[in-house]
Image 1 (spheres, one colour):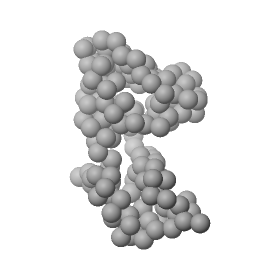
Image 2: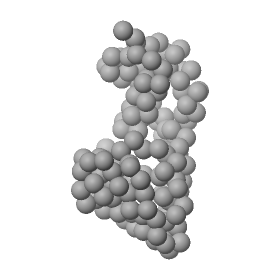
Image 3: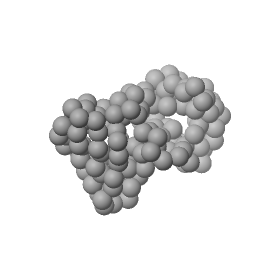
Image 4: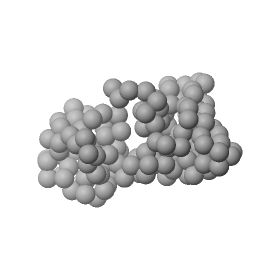
Length: 147
């Protein structure tokens, strides 16, 4: 049974966030591996609908992740994970803006955020989700090398 558009677009979000997709063909292949039946034309429409953009290095990025990257890349000093809690240390006065950008990115693993002046606490569903969110933010901030 073919899987529906919302599920396919959720899968595209996951694929783009967790990998380096450079072409629509790669995206179609990844979707087929996840048992979605779709064509390159369908994926092209999804890309337009979702507002995906290509970064200068040629990989696709979600618009909400691009905003998050702009907000955190120069403003975050450290990201630390403690189980399902992720602590984001930021420049003074920047925590609420960073929390708003994280909330706006609608990352599925995050249950919520609390912001102070220079610290954001992110609460995730599980310890594994905490590790995944922490690594994602560390990559965005340039605190760890891209995989």
